[in-house]
Length: 156
Image (cartoon, rainbow, N blue to C red):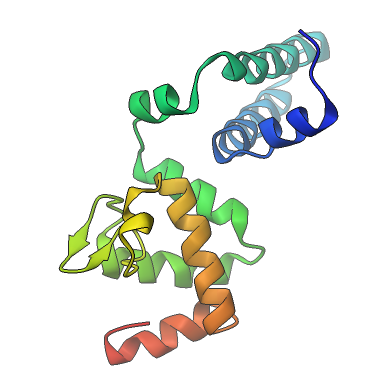
C-alpha cells in the first residue's frame, strides 16, 4: 500500500499516535539507560512505525468505539500540547476542578473535560476536547495560568 505525504502527515499528527510515540520514546530512553543494544532499540522503532501504519486499517468510528481512556494518558497528551510545565499544572487544575478528568462529565448545559457549553464539544473524544479547551483558553486568556487565576470567580 502506497501512502501519500498528506495521508502520512494526517496519520502521524493524530492524538493517539502522538501519545504512542511519546510513550515509546519514554520507554526507549529508559532502555538505553539500562544498556539495551542499539539493534534492539532500532527493531522496536520499526515495530512502532509498523503499528502506526496498521492504524489506517481501522475506521475512525471503530477506533473511537473500542478506545478506553485513562486519566494518565489524557494528562500526558495535554502535557505534550503545552510548552511549559507550569502551564500544564494550571490546565490540570482547571480540568480537575471542572470535570475531574471525566470526558463524559455534564453539568446542565456544559459538557466534557473543560465543561464547554456546546453539545458538539461533549461528543468529541477526550483528546479533541483537550485541544478545544487549550484553543479556547489561549484565545480568551492568553495562557492557562491567567485562566486559572480568573477561575477564582467560579468560571473561566
